[in-house]
Image 1 (cartoon, helix red, strand yellow):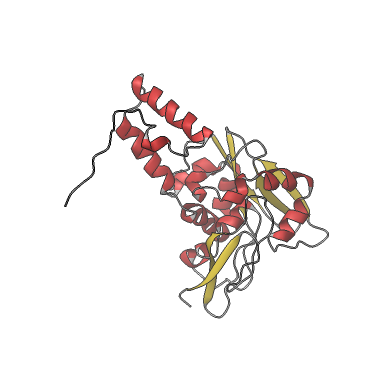
Image 2: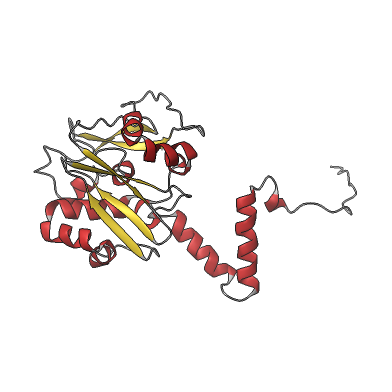
Length: 248
């Protein structure tokens, strides 16, 4: 087969920089500088990135489930979430301070980062796109009940809503209320009811019904933050949901 050869003597932009957002370009430049100065090797950077992107909300759910069944552990979690996580073999990540906040019938916490997207990735996995969006970051502070309603969460009038602002030095984990009808579930079963959104505070923990729970399938907020209607087992702004069978 004949191949046409073209002149490749002219300069080209690096393939990795094609369509690269400014923020990504800054990160790449910082990576190059760290390697050049000998602070980190490329292998070390890759391992850290792989660890970061592999995180899910499973570890956070383990903490919540243990707190639901062990009052003494819950108090330790609320006092020092980092130490409580290490106690049960969960890596809380590099954040200097991780604070756990308990939702009750009287007080509901919701987490936001007004400056960027500070978030307990080690416990909850990568933040959803809507968490990083300007509408969520601004409106959660000015109209938290309105934002919660868009996520399908309606609190009773007497419930106090407390908005907490994450920083580079302090990350938050919400301990949602334990659902009714879960007395017979073990710790693993309870953990299956704890979602990422419930640990941010924009949803309640799932309620087991007819032997199945619902879990998030993919994000569904557009860049403007407007609610998208999702047709699935449940209509929920910000997530598509599907049924997942759980042990009785």
